[in-house]
Amino acid sequence: MNVLFIGPYRELGEWGRKSRALLHAVKSCVPNTTSRPLYMFGQSGALAHAEDAEFAVFDHYDAIIQFALPSISVYNKACGRNIGVFNNEMLGIEPDSLMRMNLLDEVWVDSQDIAKSIYKKLPDVEVKVLGAYLDPALWMLTEIGEDISVLRNNNNPTVGDRFLFYMIGSLDEKEGIREALSAYFSTFSYADHAIFALVLTEPTDPDSVNNLITSCKGSLGAVRSGEQDANITVFNPHPQEGPLNLKMRKCVHKDADCLVSSSYSLNISTTALEAACFGNTPILNKGTATYEALGGENCWAVDSYEEISLLHQRPFEDMFTCQQVCRKPIVKSLCETMREAYENKFSRDKKRKANSKVKDRLESQENYSSLEDLLCL
Image 1 (cartoon, rainbow, N blue to C red):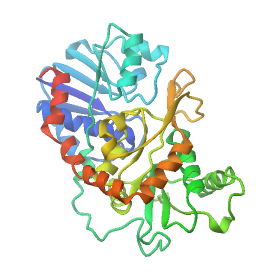
Image 2: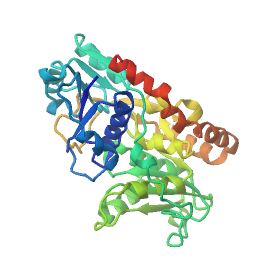
Image 3: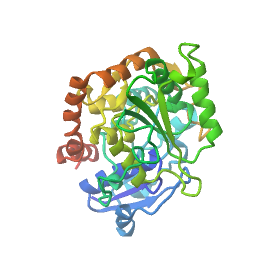
């Protein structure tokens, strides 16, 4: 079987990580794979592990896999099965996207709920659910020593040996950063031996960061004096260094204790998968594909609810509109879960022990066999 894979696997963001993970899984199942990069969000970088497939060219292709938005997907009758892999983050599809999906032979997503919502609209299109796969680029960085630290270093004495909650992302609304910070500041004080690290993936205006933190504190009311506020630290990449690279990302995971993932997205989060592989027992919204993929033994569960998307930040016009539904965390549940993750050492150690098996499970042949089934090998 020959497969042509098209996707943004050279990019540094979430779409790039998921595209690399899927490309690696496809190559593991189908050696005769040709890849072609797609640039969607502008963050590109040379990733040698994926480039070998760019030089593999065959006289025909039995399937084409497009990891992209429906609005830029095309049907190619010369490539046999046309498969669209859509990184849908919310329930509900725009009419124009449905029209594009209807042209394809198969649609793959990584959320059962999203798959059901698409099938209701397009009963004649075969909709399949992908498994969870790891971005191999992060694990190829073997040169990082145990003594290298990003968050726990001499330049940041506030962290010390405190229990380190962390969040990797941007200030976009859908990241759920306001909920995470509000839960942290309302649950913890300076007296707790804990700290929250906000790790930004791109250079961000410091005033915007400070204003958000101040706003989250202010929304809680006068529950304590400013001097008693819980500790927080911000890692903001320098503009000259560009976005958070893979090496820094890996160091952040190594430094921290517990990832807080309060994103509104229903699909699988590569950041949460990485955190589990490092034993950082992620805090996740129930009802998301990430929670289903990891299972309750590997993470902390937060109650959540469905809400229509009223986001102001949209990378594309057909994303995150009011016709789509996201899943938001219940802040009260998030407060309780963060406190339990901090205090309950027995449960934390039990989850960390389970975390130690996550990487091997996600990279196992058994996990890849699910992709072979999708490809009908």
